[in-house]
Image 1 (cartoon, rainbow, N blue to C red):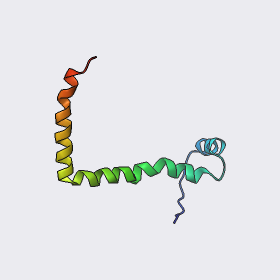
Image 2: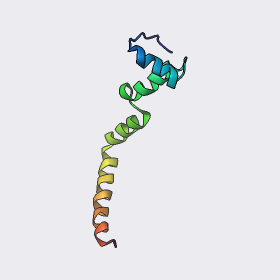
Image 3: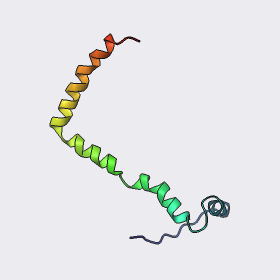
Image 4: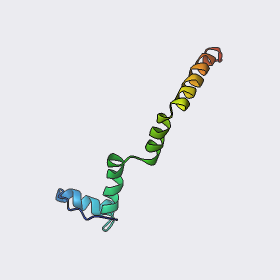
Length: 76
């Protein structure tokens, strides 16, 4: 569902938007720019869910700590 929003911007910015983005496409352009700043991404939400799994996090930490020493023996 979409909601109508009225905003005020500088005239030069408006005409620049019409020229670059195209008339009738400004709303979508603005929404695409604003969306990541006001809504969590699905990926971010998934990472938060994974972080809540303490057992998984502990196993991941153990694994990463165990592999840390491996890099000391790698040729450079």
